Length: 604
Image (cartoon, rainbow, N blue to C red; front, top):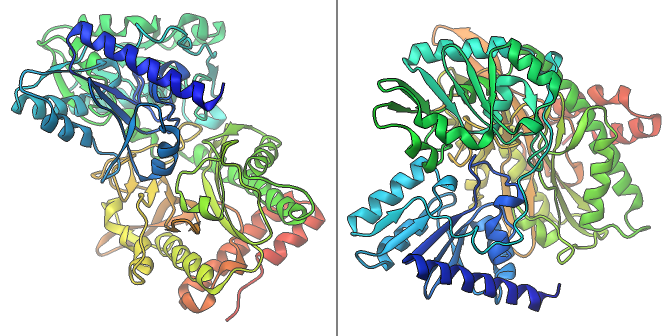
């Protein structure tokens, strides 16, 4: 299909949506980038924005009126969205603050009193729906939360995925489903709730020690669950649960019911009971199904809090996974160094090579997100993903940023390395090293128990701020254990993928990714995963620190030693020593020699 045909299709779909709006008396339609589980990655069935507008980014909200059609998205996608929306009938609206519903302010300002704003309540959260209702009500604007205007016009809509669930062995989970269910129920007693509604697929997967194949990049099964004092109800398509799992569920008091009757079961909850749900992860449609006589408690789900703290088995498995991932990355960078200049390498072919090397490692099921392989000016786009239209050829002069991760049975990885292809200039080395200082300074942090992520973020930004530099995304997000690569509740910086009130605790794994981007030139980011561990006890209480668990060399050619203080230089040399010692036995002799050169001590 040509670009012109694509454009015509998008304009035709917009016209069809407007016709349905007019017929139903809808003055403005909101289309979030979401599914009923409000997760990051969507099945094709729910990617309405891509179908309607051509925009393929993972974050955005569309608003359509009779005379206006716009997509709100953040700075990660400005360049991408501008190109994909061209001549589609939709215009780009740039968010001033990432992850905020600024379209609500626009609607409150533009819509007339008495107008009807509609949204499909299945794909908007309780918390956002509450904000929407409050602001529109103040202006006398009506709101419908039960308007599906997409299905009537999306005639070739992809079906829901049909991947089969599979068991996560105890050696990887570290705790049986019965033990997890017991812990959740104990927390429920403490919170005086009778039921816990689980809407995030990762919460359900963790609780039941299963995984699925319904979501790209995350091993999830589309499912809901309700936990009570005497049973767990799993809402999932029966055909997707193999017989041995059904038998295990029967033994463990897990009742399997059809996915589509979740709403009906919620309607039957007894009067006077107390239901716990997470307002940011529960759809308005599910919330509206709860009887008025049921007391609803809004809080993070219990599994969200419990699974953030890895058990001993999960930590042990993660360390092994990091070795395997480090071997794959080492072999990739050896291949790149030996091949560039003699063969054509593009961003996409580099991504494919890395994926093949990861997949050769035991227990790897695939990438944990779309690989960001970015050469020169593309590296200045924090969430750039190469496409056939943008696929740049890597040359022997410039900057290459590689942000990637793998899904292994033993854990989920996420790592960014930036390397020089050729001889870097002084400015490149300065910018790289200032961002690297942030990575190191956060990794060296020691802090008292009870510290929240935003309280230590300054450590990651100070070197950049001192030089008039900054980056527009958060510094650290939680990472799941063979679940989501972005998974709270902990966060360092913004609350985009976490909860600002959550304290950093031993067992939590968080990313450490300060950066600097120069639009049109290049970008630098060194990202590691850090595990929170106990440091010491003192008269002032328990103190914690981070252990960097990612294992991959950091480019010496880009490092300006004059910008590192003694402690930072010592950290870097100690880290490189650890990388070599942990990976050497898994490498061939020539690979070991190469890594030895890359991790040799740096001396001023």
